[in-house]
Image (cartoon, rainbow, N blue to C red; front, side, top):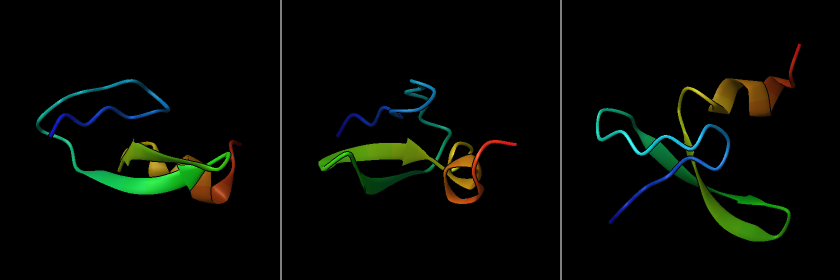
Length: 42
């Protein structure tokens, strides 16, 4: 399965990805991009 983060676009096999729903669509997000999504961009 090919994973691609919808935030940063990375497809690195060294990162962990999680499934999420954004704007009603199922997407993948890497764990590096997850904190800003949870806490908002500062």
